[in-house]
Length: 158
Image 1 (tube, rainbow, N blue to C red):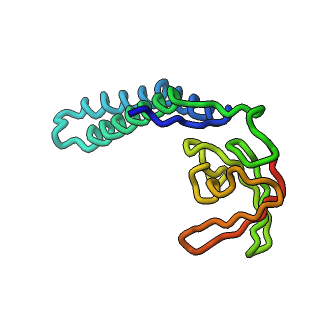
Image 2 (image 1 turned 60 degrees about the vertical axis):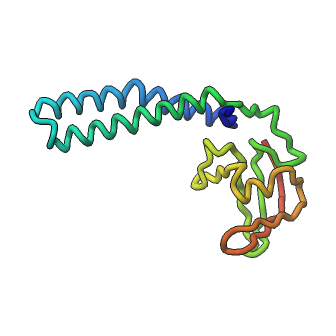
């Protein structure tokens, strides 16, 4: 089975590369030192420091493998690829929530760099999926567990 393509903006790519570099150059060394120190305490069969360090090491190595796989399968969305006539990955969309008459702005990104706290939503999320391909002036209904949300697209930019 082919690996899933990971869609990233240049900013998202840089963030993943920075995290990978930090894990490889800093965190690996820190955990190795913790393991060495825990071993120096003697019997490792009942050594919680050793156990914690080994668990952290396993987590870090797993995350490194995940990041490397994501970067191998990355497709970068360049700013020139982002259209302003319809919503696509990389678009920043100004929406009006028709229920509360409030405006909200989202950037549509691939799932690997989604961060709702920073208003970066995944193209695979309910709102992201509903917005893709829509144009300014469109009203979009989004089915969510709490019911249906209605948004009007006010602006699309890169």
